[in-house]
Every structure is written in structure tokens, then in C-alpha cells.
Length: 315
Image (cartoon, rainbow, N blue to C red; front, side, top):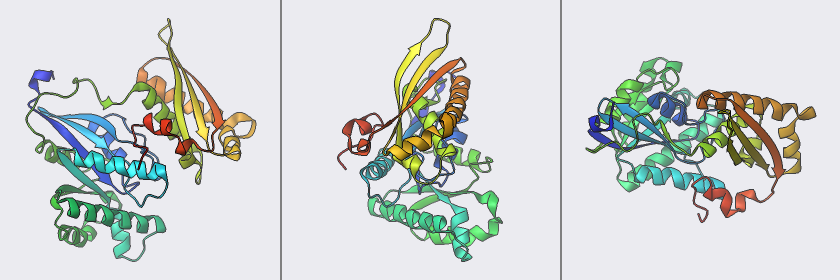
């Protein structure tokens, strides 16, 4: 489809608690991977713009960081970015982990699910304060009988912040197409904001860093993934069509460096292999990836660390 065939175009922010499935939903709507997805919370650190097309409508999806009680500077910057994305959007989708609400209703919620509900209610309060209406998307409905969610929908509708409700599974695609149509209906008239073949508004260097960070989060455990940053230092296009990528993994402690390297360097080799394979597939060419690890105890307090991610430092 050409640009002239696009009659409506706009932005849609997907907001919600950490690990509600926002990145999975963004990727499902776009039809390609534009945001990293792991089982860990707080994976997304900055708004990622994915570009979806529904008929003659172009939807620029802003996959925002999870909204939670932020204490550290990095956390505050992430939450600020999430709300900024919602304020500027033509439509807002509040994605909720419905499985957590069902578990809570049955008195079987885990500690993580309890935190998720607290964060959901924080989002609702903010929407009430702003007067902003949102589409409610109840995610992970494939994990329980649908009749269990009906009382929850009634409870959430009473908050007055939703004007439409959808039950979906971002993981397997249930209900995603109907949600896409609902989002498209809210986009204003206008020409395409991005070329028809573009699926993300993300510099390739930053996307490459995110791919490697995803592999680190999948491979490592406990708190370490939240104490590191990946920066693409060099990107060299080679004459044979391949690309040489050099990245540095910045950690806050010396013992974290040992964890990233692994015994005999095996962990970083595995991470490099997985990241290289995905980057090669994404770019459709050979990638030579070189990873290095350095310790910087104060990287989260350096302004330049935030500028590269498009986050505000003074929050």
C-alpha cells in the first residue's frame, strides 16, 4: 500500500503495569518484533514506536515502559516516559494482566500479581485525574475460563476511565485483530507518518543494543539485568555486505562483570551468539558482533546514559 492510500494516521500509547504484555501486544499488532520481550518485569525502558497498518489507517504504537512505584532515577525516568507517551497519543490502551485479577479474586495471587494489581490501580487513578479515556484490554484470557473475568470487567468499568473493553491474548493473537480495528477507528485523518515498509521508529544502533539486552535478561537472573546497560559503540558497514557491531555491556559492580562473563567466558559467548543470530535475521545479512564488559558504578547517575535512551535525566 502506498502513502497516498493512507487516509488516517496517528499515535496509540499502550500503557500498563510491568509485565502486562505490552511489548508482546505491540509486536503482535505490528506483525514484527520491534520491542524486546522477556518474562522479567521492567524490560522496556523507553517508548518504542512500532508502525502498524489497518486498512487505510496507519497506527504508530508507542510501547511504553511499565508504570510502577518508582524510586531510583532510572525508574522515575521510565515512568515519566510512559505517561508522556500517553499524554501525546491519539488513543490510549490500558493493558491489564487479567490472570492476576482473576487470581486475586480467588485469593490465589502471587506476590508479583499483587504488585501488578497495585500498579493497575495506580494507572486508573492517574487516568481519572487526567480525565483521559482509554480502551481497556484484558490480556492473557487464554489462561482461565472467560466467565471468571466478567465481574472484573464490571468492577473496572465502574472506574469511569474506559469507553471500550476488549479481551485478548497478545501471546496467541486472540482478540488482537478486533482491538486493532478499535484503535484504528480512533486515528485522525491524515497522511502516513512513516513509509509503508517501515515497522519501527528506532535507530538501528539502539535496536541492536536492545536485542543484546534482551538476551542478557533471558540468560541472567535476579537483579542483575536491571543493573546493566548495553551501548552500541561502533557500527561498520563492510564491503562484503556484512556489518561489524561493537557493543559494551555496562554493569554497576565488579562481581556483576564476572556474572556476565561466566565461567571461562561461556555466558557472554552464549549471549553474543543468540544476539548475533537474531540481528543477522533482522538485517538479512551477516553480523560480526563483538561484546565487551566494563564496570561503572555510577552509570545510572550519568546524564549521557539517559540521553542515548531518550529518557529525561532530571526527574
